[in-house]
Length: 228
Image (cartoon, rainbow, N blue to C red; front, side):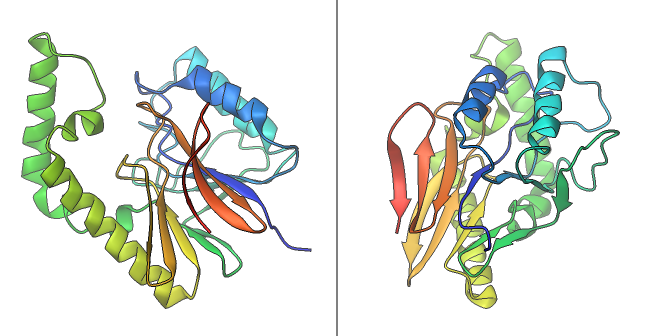
């Protein structure tokens, strides 16, 4: 019998000061035994750099989880082609499918906007750092970007549109991405697009796939969005 259930998260960014590592470990403790866990890209913020001890413990926990449940690590733009010295039974892939129900892709390959505007992205990051230096609230740059909702909405809509187009081409019911750090659940023309946001700012999200439904949840809260 094939896989009928799984949990999907994205954009943990281990190594980032903004990763809610304790919350993530507590969330892992709530998962049913044996159900697959899909890590949808940008699991590690800066591959090659040493992780803080607390974040290294999270990585080691994921390796241990792979001994008792399928753990699928979908590459993102941050951790593309990452190789771990000890990866346990973690399976590394570019994308992952649950039959004809769900396609899991990080989303960076669907993003045609950010690569075209590298200079803007560079300037925006410098502005963000300057703001913090001048005493502004410290936050992940993606959280800061949400202060310009019109621009941020353009990126979200762009990735969602491309993801739904791929879902139609692949013949799947739904597609889930990360990358944009913006949790979403929408349905268009009978197909669903989910985005699981990021674990660098609250609220924290995950996708639960059950035999009869898919639902986007906020951790510690009831179902936030769903799409049957």
